[in-house]
Image 1 (cartoon, rainbow, N blue to C red):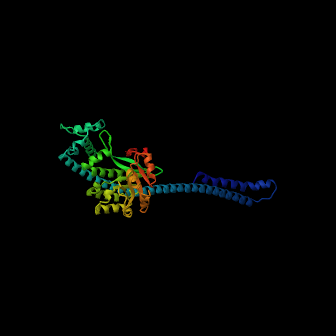
Image 2: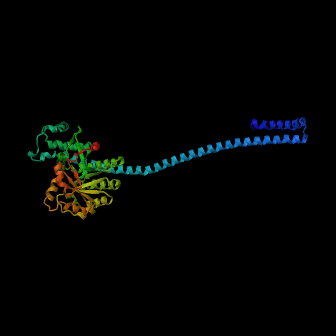
Length: 416
């Protein structure tokens, strides 16, 4: 009990006693009759009124304190609910991250399997190279030209690698540079734009292997590809290109881009059972890339695939991956068969297209045939505006070539 609650009744009692004693005397002074019993009753009423007034004040204080307690409890409940929601969101985010992390781990394991296959290939090629010098030694002397000033960038690292007295040809230098790039992981990725016609709006990128010297200079594909093919390195380069392309496309999908990418699969890779089996298994674990990554196969290789390779590509098509039929020279296409196998693009070099269709009475006959299988026509090697104008009448859907952009390192993809 507070002091005010203790002393208040005493004060009310004193006031009541004063009223009970003093009221009759005060009333007698003015000449009005007032008995002492009535004074006592009046004093009692005053006392009771004081107690009631004190009770009302006490109740008001108690109610105010109760309201404050209720408000504090509500604040605590609100904070607890907020904490519980925050905790629930954290748990849910963690639960969603676990499968993603597991999928990422599976992806890394699959990449490691492919890279292991590539390392094995490189080791085998190195062992073969130890038994034989570069390919130019077996070629006629007329095919080996003297080293020019443009080839100086290949001179120092190769000269240091050999201590014999014979002079290396430029093809041997290029081949050694390619081998070094493969062994030292200097195979990058270059991109060339593929545009929609006639608007020239960017639609896709062509992925190309970028072989770089120790100084960072890139060797043009038209320079190293024939030499690498004769040395048996074409499959290894293409396999590395596939791995780099998949890694790059997956990274770009996480960022922002909706552009598709076209990556070539050469015949040597299709026949490389160890790598291609690992690769198709890897793509089955990355079906989310199906809309962003297309595989390019030449008409020659597509028409000569064995049954096993044909089934593996058909499985990829069922998962949503699409194919580009490249280097088409025979326009008598099996449209329905190509469409069922997942081919959505037919790519023809510009000179070949003009040569074949200029002799046709109707220049759009190929376009109408492709429409039956929902296949788009893509033309490569467009270098000048006049060349573009000459092929637009054929109903071309996509164009690629120097006119729209040269291959650039993937790190500089935003230049287009």
